[in-house]
Image (cartoon, rainbow, N blue to C red; front, side):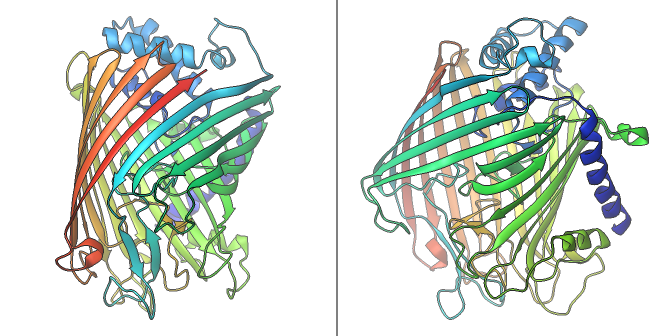
Length: 543
């Protein structure tokens, strides 16, 4: 294990250095909820894409264009005849990324390196929410939902039946939000993105900052690109891992981080024997967690490595650490390399995970993915032989079939996630900690899987294109919290359906969603059973 981790450290340094020899252009990121990610999954399901690295998102617009171009090349080389839906999705992607496609070798279109787009996307959303959000609480001398452990957390679900939405919180009753984005690019080395949001709530009572109207910068960042290394600074979201419904280390469940990030947004091939690792990506980031309460002014940093040694097999490694803050010793960034000696970082809250994805071509390119992670919240002198990765365990197993039917209209996904396996006699909890007592959170919401600590989650979703322009989605989610350490088990069952209409080559889309859930032993209070409802309608225009 120690040798493997040291090899990963070497690969990270090699990737940073070798990227300086690879030509690239600066390009803003594609939001994590954009329709183009699902469209790429469909193209991959028909054997058109082989180099996509699912585990490191968001993709840049240039990376999206590269994958779309790869699909065209593969279709022409293999003479693949596509079903009408897949042909239309490919045409819609061509239109959406028409400005970037010339930069990746597609001959059509005009090469345009400098531009400004005052209106890139506009989105209006109406949300009716009925029900109180669940809380994740284990506070010393205060509210405690868990037994035994000294690990602390104070977090909120946000809005019942709403998750992975950049931490936007709605109140009970009616809510309206409006957001728009603008992008610009200058030559080949600079790009920028800004996305403000306005949220109007009928009933803000119970929120940390109660306000009928909230105006905020949801995302806003700039990028400097030198060859294939990219330095991003500003506010943005990330998703690390193979999951769709949630992930162990980093998702967009919480509000975007104000970060400094170094990465190679388009994968490279490493030199010498390391080219056998295939397409390779790295990400390193650091952020100050504004609003973190205990201890105040905490920080977080982390890195991810992602590679694909085969067209059918992908691997990744992620780690993050909360550090610093008032009352904590000064943190030396060089201590991050202690990880590669198999040791936990001092005075920090650290999470680590490996992830894998296997594509099965003969089963209509069905994908099976697995994640395995460790949390250092367990505390005491006990040392397990595998150290960090074997203290408090989490794992996820997923299955995704992009083409249940030959025409690609029906897909199906299943994910099971669990994080209640302590191997330390003094058990801790995922997303909780004895020093960073607010937990692994940002702006009161968990940065990893929204199910929370000491929990398991079963999720399944299927979508079906009724026509090329109308998509029906059905999903079911079953969550149990307090499995090992809770005063009692809280059980949540969610039933959701959504309908999406698209117009004008997906320049305009309308989505409506209804969700219903039952909560048994709400906030781990025995006998407190509830029912919640959600009605959501979103209108999105892309220019």
